[in-house]
Length: 404
Image (cartoon, one colour):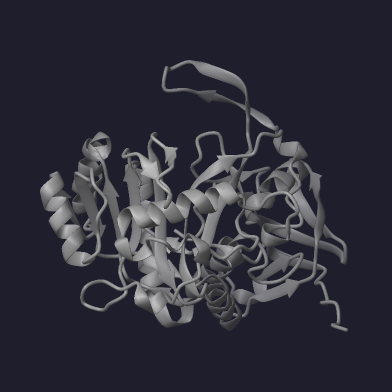
């Protein structure tokens, strides 16, 4: 039987959550305290109710990309990519790049992304025109066959990280700075007084603090409630009008799975690991029996991944049609009796792989039929929020963009 961790009576900084955000925050905070002479890692405590990487970070596909339509997001992600590149071995990071292939309806937006990537010095290649795109993709993959692609954006940087290994690497860097990471400590409440958080209440005792960081991924709804913040907010829409009583949180079910083939067989024409692939298409999608799956826009992403033991990827998440307060986040991920991917996802995703590459034709039966996926907690505009509330509570609400 493991010995319960000894909880300190107080700490300057208490970070809740030992996933990618909590561990990265702990590492950078401790380092900056040390370098500024204002403290060090012994001022920082990380609490997690289970263990390092036990939540969304530990089952994530781990894609690291810069491909966003919003300039602010691209600048943020370029910074994050630099951190991943700083120690690929420790972070189990594979800098294979990221490639988006898209139809004509997305062309103008992709051209804009490329232009703005050049402005910030983020290396990428833009290919336009259906024939040039086909040639580019067939040079990369000899078996490429998807029609209707008129624009390709190939980011030289980016790639993916192995989920659990990268969390161990981040935890190691935080511990090397002197940070304490305490597992098996569940936060049950926050002691609020005079408009600020005075202490973090757990099932193993109370820790007084000067600052608290909520870095809990899909459990952010619960920390938000502990901070006594509103479940609805007012949002100004693109129409310029203020919309009241908009739900602060919406849960989406992440659609991901693995094709059980040798990942070493999915290489480019040079025998190297390919970029992470993201394909959007408005072409009709048929299954291996010729039956129509959809004639609407569809999209997938995929990569060979030895960590997953196959070709791993996913498609667009699905909105959970429940009030956020009624969604059971625990048990999380594959252990959930309710929130795992459906057979319809496997049908669509394997058909899409075969639509793009002849090597994946007839491989539907190799899809690994096992529980996969997980919940993501999204803000009203589905973008991250990093902000201070209640004077000293820094909330990281990542809208499932954590690894990037």
